[in-house]
Length: 101
Image 1: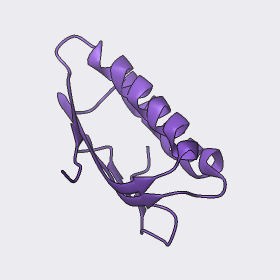
Image 2: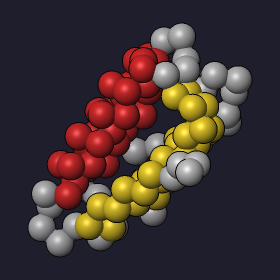
Image 3: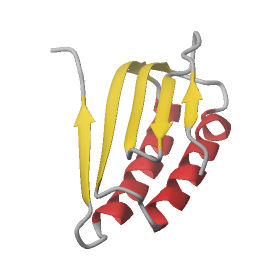
């Protein structure tokens, strides 16, 4: 698995998926014109990760300031993959959703 680091753009979030540490972060805005094409490589790598996580705990931080409905499905895909990881005996998954009050 290759770690994924993508800088934030005008319409895509900052992405930091460190598979060796089990640390994942998405932050900023997300309204890419082609959400599936943007997120699918990330979900594919995550699917490989959950087959055999190298660490005992996986953490993901969602820090969106805005995301559109096109981003809903990829977020669901990410959470489904993490649900698979949570089923592994002895593996912990922590999801942190940051938001403005």
